[in-house]
Image (cartoon, rainbow, N blue to C red; front, side, top):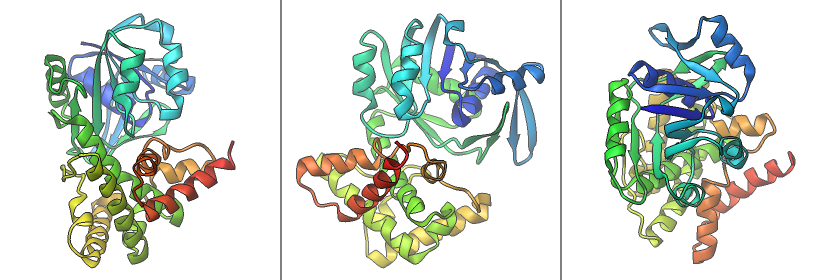
Length: 325
């Protein structure tokens, strides 16, 4: 399978390298030439750091989309607000399928409008990858899962082929008949954590172990679940995306669950980890709040659903971002 990854950041570079090792023909499209230069200096290898040591994986890397003319699958991994510019530069690439691995909701319809002849695929992934230096990426927990599905047709032959490739590459993956439902649950799980991190300006495990910020996370989660239920979205737990203990039972039980998960995360080596949204605010650049918490906030406005905690958190992040424009 010929794959091009548009936006080879931490996730894209890491996953692309593993898929290449599994036999796929993968091209990584980086934004910065320094990554490509460093890979070339390492004799065409991307360095992957893991808890047990580092490995070197041969990859094809470039910053010029014109180096790619066709692909069986294009995985779009750029930030949401960079999508239009990135796709414009890749317009010449003939693709059979396009997959979005971006955070947020509504990607299926958007990509269907842009690529009406291609199969549209959605990837929801908990693979933890971060670029820590040029040509070097860090991989977190090996067993964090990925879900893949066609938002319009469910599990198609191509979806299953991609899932099989991920598993062959050692990236635990499963096909989903309801990939949009998985993404809803991920946003409901992720957005409150990210917004609370911005409000506190603290690393994530510290945010989660604070009773007050844990309370805010639970209340934002419950706000978002009300919107999901009003739209007929099934909210349930997925592996590493657990939201039910925040939205069922008493408030105290929800708060204690968040605190416990924060402690467990810290014990697994997560101490000091900062959410991407917090890093964006610290670096004075746009975050993905509009396509995540903001997306659900707008649905709540349309439906007349009160979401006071989400409203406050979303407005704080949006207000901070307004200073960067």
